[in-house]
Image 1 (tube, one colour):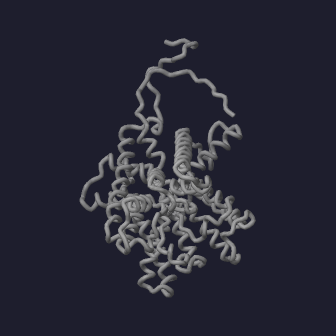
Image 2: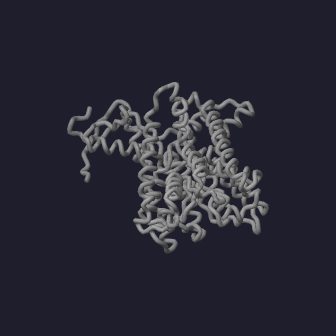
Image 3: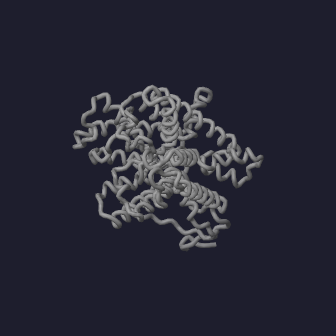
Amino acid sequence: MATASSDVNVVPVAEPVAQLAHPSPLAKQNALVLVVGFALIVAVGTLLLRLPISGTERPLTWEEALFISTSATTVTGLTVITPSQDLSPFGQLVLLVLMEVGGVGFIAFSVVLFALIGRRLGLAERMILKQALGVLETARIVSFTLYVLAVTMAVQAAGAFLLWLRWGPALGYKRAAYLAIFHAVSAFGNAGFDLFSGTGQVLFGFGRDPFTLSVMMVLILVGGLGILVISDLIMYPWQRRLSVHTKLTLVITAVLIGSGLLIVLADEYFAGSALKGLSLGERFWVVLFTVVSARTAGLTIIQLDQLSQASALVLMVSMFIGGAPASMAGGVTMSTVGVLMVAVLSTVRGVPQAVVFGRTLPLETIAKAVAIMTVSTLVNFFVTLLLLVDRTGDLFTVAFEVVSAFSNTGYSMGATADLDTFGRLLIAFTMFWGRLGPLTLVVLLTQRERPTLCRYPAEQIVLG
């Protein structure tokens, strides 16, 4: 036996290790399937968009097709073309399908495929679905995934129907039906693509219409809350309780929208000019939509490069935070930020455990939140650095573009269109990383633990 003065203590068995730090082979296999699956979808989308039939006056280049396919599959919305002008109806249909597959997830669709061919899901497939959708009980995977599909289609159909009713008299009901379906999918999927850029109008003249903006904001919010929160809210009248995850998500959503609305409304006091010429009512609806859309939706109805840097910074922070896990949104997620804030407040108050809404957060959850935040910050830093080294540009504008790509938002201040091939590939990689989630790639790249019988003594590190 080792003495008290020994540097190493020998213990009978190795202690349990958190899955994040030392993932099992199955966890790494699940992460690999997610990465390869999304990569294949991007590849197929690239091939389809490269076809001459997808373009209008000219076929898209391989570089453009890859960028747009990645942006659509990751439901980002950043683009190096104008979809309404450069994509044919076939190309726009490909874009729509990529947004739908990327938003709902190829994993959810695979469950339907398994059911159609009569294949029973094995343990590996169930674990993949569990990791992708955030379901805690593996036994409920199949029924929950089908529930996700049903809710998704129902919400999108309702949104498209309302937009069709509003746009029909002005645009013609046939044309309005096509536009309503496309924008309902784009809004609910937090994709950010639209078919009105380049037409000289914003939302075909409905960019200041409270009804249109309200419908699209509801779609964005529902898509960004995540199916777990939606399911919780639907069941509330019967269960009369909300999970801590749902409560935390709703609180952070309200704080982000409320604080963002107040700051961006005062944009002119910060030397911004994006809101000039708007009445008070128009300004309220435009700003509210912009703040809601900043939560990784990216549908743009104002000139973002005319906002003050104070307002743009608020939008950038909102983009970085993003939506909820198991949702259409990206970012580090509100849960990650919420867990870190609870941990910080508990430390400041001298409370030994992180407690929120009467529940204690496990140390593993806090460790995952720290890992996600750290990796995400480093990715944004290094991509911004590489872009600044590759080309000259304003630091804030480039950083805004990188955060938009990482969070799968699609807001742009004009930097993406000016990127060279290296810069576009770098932004495409950032979009791909952001959609899969830092945690997935951390699990994929982490080495498996080697069991040891040694336990080293603890020692304090000076902080602050």
